[in-house]
Image (cartoon, rainbow, N blue to C red; front, side, top):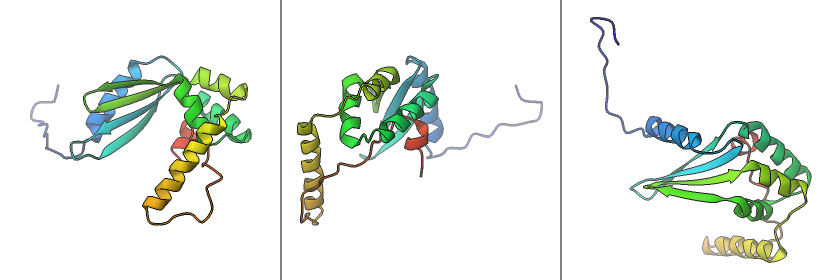
Length: 159
């Protein structure tokens, strides 16, 4: 309720952030605790906006997993491999949600699960192809595949 005489002005806006935040909050409520969510809003113009979210307990657990993975030398290929082992994907309209339960990911990192060399080689080929398509072919093949991408807010949201 508003006090007598007070008016509420609603102004049209092209900023989708408040609506996206409300959708993200609803998606978070639909998932189990200790889950990392990668939420993509596909826009009509072909662009996309990514939101990261964590359910209850996900923030500290995700950060601990990232610290352990980085300390153990995990890389991007390991992140794809371990993540895909536990990923569930949901799509509704133009919103895609990738849900990563963090306890199984933590167990994989603790138990030394790594990507097979064939997957690592495949990622190297993708990187080399991307360089080539940008008109900058590599003189030598790619050896590293990039760092562990992260499942916790400290790593994923750093600038």
